[in-house]
Length: 346
Length: 237
Ligand SMILES: Nc1ncnc2c1ncn2[C@@H]1O[C@H](COP(=O)(O)OP(=O)(O)O)[C@@H](O)[C@H]1O
Ligand SMILES: [Mg+2]
Image (cartoon, rainbow over the protein chains, first blue to last red):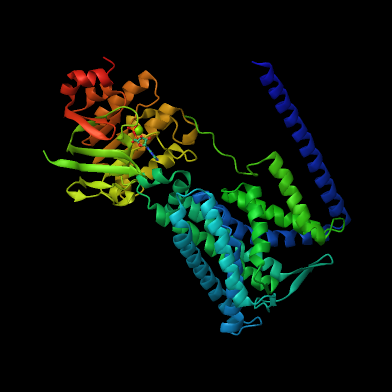
């Protein structure tokens, strides 16, 4: 072994040691901070966690769309966040304008579920169309070409949102049953729970589709090797379309849930939440479905705890905290939390 | 004898580069036919085009009396034309079992699939031991067995094998060639690509010699094995 190799080995060991020490210190500090807060006010801790999780599941719905598409054609679909935005605007129009519902009633709940089905179908269709007409031709082109196209599609969708929703944010009434409950002096709004209650079944359904169905098998095969998938008789084009449909449907559902639980739409929602959702996907390991959900829940929780705990940096630091953690994590685990490529022997 | 596969005047290009210039070949029911030629001659390109991964620039491909040139790959597999590609191309993050199941992706005859699954594991007992292992973590030889086994799971009438012995230890090479003969005994027709020309000519009935995109010679495998030019160029004699 040459002297250079030895030096390299030593540096590598020292670096690993340093990483482990820093990681341990950071973990201890975070646990310390959480414990203090928990002791100081358990109920507030609980409230912050619930709010955080409720945001997290919403991020997860959007993050899955990024990671599904990246997993199958290695494209960062910049337009995905804007699809979510259009889903929110569509839902607002569907419920409040086309069906004229602005308060909770059994009829309005029916409209809500009708809207869920419609917004998921329409978003799925739009996403399939985007792939078909904007990305498919570029599948064998250098990676930069579809990336730029995706940015372009993002602008197109934003422009549609701008024309449809106007240049400022709009507020809407929720048609879901209003109310809140109290535990030891802390109130939690029902809307927080609705997001979780609607999202969880969707996440489970989606996991089932990917891991248990024939289509899911085709997706995983196509993601690993397109030509080999073709040799198995898999219709690769259709499989990719299906993946975009799945991601689009989830983004549409997220749009409705956001619009109904936050009561807000704006043409640049895609930028705000899309960025967070994309960050979740990267944090979890882009391409990994469990990773996207894990990353999203973590980011939701981090934000919730940071914003809601008695001793914390507060809401104005929310984004800073999230991205600082992302940067630290990326420095030490470039593949994200669950994104570890299997070593392929030759 | 009826021609199962007939390739006529095939030309295939990558962009401006003509990789296959003039290939005509026939594979009859029940035969082992081998296509030999040095590295870069255009063997894999020919097979990839037959399987529909590439579109021909000119020429026709007929399989069981039907034109398949230019058809989508998945439609060709459906007709019973399966390929074990060059470089194995197994799905690395899936288990051996999942890989084999994917081989039968287009079939829905559950009981027959189960029988074929057993047949493949009998052909390659090693795969049975590794059945739940992630394919990407197996040795090269095991991956090769899996690639051939996976193609067998498609219930092929015609099996295309692209360099199944590439990079394997000599013992394994022998084992692969023995298996090829066993596969033919199951009634499956085989088109085999090999760099190991002497072993290929040993098991094959007929052979074609491909040189820079053009078929230069063809005939009975035993005759070609004795041919001076072939011996000199491909058998190291
Ligand atoms: N994807 C590709 N793009 C451009 N040229 C290619 C590609 N694949 C193969 N070629 C070229 O086509 C020719 C034939 O290659 P190939 O069919 O792989 O040969 P063989 O299998 O006989 O070794 C070679 O000159 C090779 O460089
Ligand atoms: Mg080759």
